[in-house]
Image 1 (cartoon, one colour):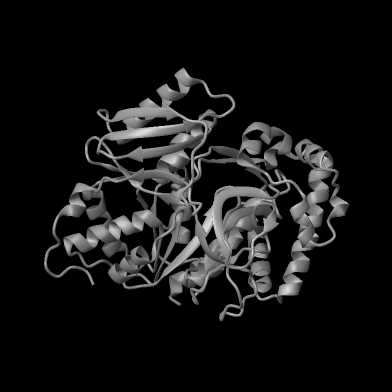
Image 2 (cartoon, helix red, strand yellow):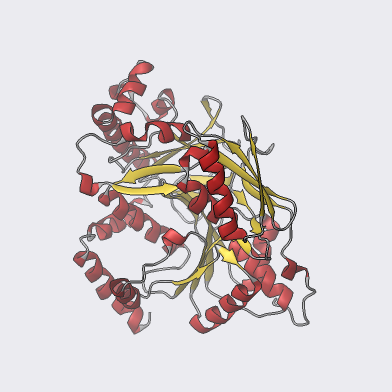
Length: 466
């Protein structure tokens, strides 16, 4: 380990956490490093204790849950094993949209309610709160999962990301913190052009990060660009992908171009990291110390290998409990044990998160994830949205309205924001529908474009990246 990495990891990072009041993040990290190797039965006992406490708390202090549990004749003490959880009602995104205020714990300190929101890859805008302690435990969980990909505090990292509210702040304190902690180089993929991809290549060759973290479709687009242009990229130690999935051939292309392994990660803004690959690459280990994940088919647990709807219970956020929350994705459990020695349960695969880049009226590319999390999320009354594109510079919104949908205002908002991000000449159309169907696999496609970026149709020069 180089000297500066040691300084960051052992001195600067703990010092910054202490000064910001977040030193408990280190406590959570130590716990998660230990519990990842617990035997399966001990891990389930830990989950049961945390789940029991959560149900009791939610029943006592959250009007929504008290009414919901009692409406089906259940009380927290009816939970005698983890398997009993399936008797409790499922939490839908529409519940959060309509009853979120009654899900916040009564008398919870207002200065300990951290607001957040997401449009998500399911196109349904959600607002929620978490506590400061949950924010710290989420950060610790992310660090633990990063280490599986060979990424630790103090390493050089570059981020190909498309959510502006995740971008680092620009005030002097934030810049000082980034300098001390060697925080990531930020490469914004919300709006992408051929020129910005060329700039990404130059900056990565100069920065030379150990790890590249990316929206899956962003790094795929970048890899396609590099290969088409015959550009040899900087080759990091690993690439951590999230937000969307990569098909096997797409993953192989990214690994071939960058010459390093991809570590897939699954999560959502509501509960942070849900599961990640370890270096065995045999499924995604669930962050089971903080989350209880179920896969259900109808009302029954799915069998190993059987696709079903993913439900998540956040065991550590008592400020606004999420209990049996239907994420909107489908997945399946992996069977057997992992060679890495961790007993954390594994997801075999996750489907339901596919978004494409949309082509604007001037040829720019706009991330579907960006539109989900930065445009749709700011208008909960839109309900659920899908975007379709069959011609460059034209988009069709299919809208299943929310309970407080106001056609004139909401459609005007979509039109103005679409022109802001896709160009003034973009043609915007919409359809109001009763349902937005999933694919036969269960995937929900937030955005789908059949338009290929013009610059990717150019034949590659000799000496393409290999």
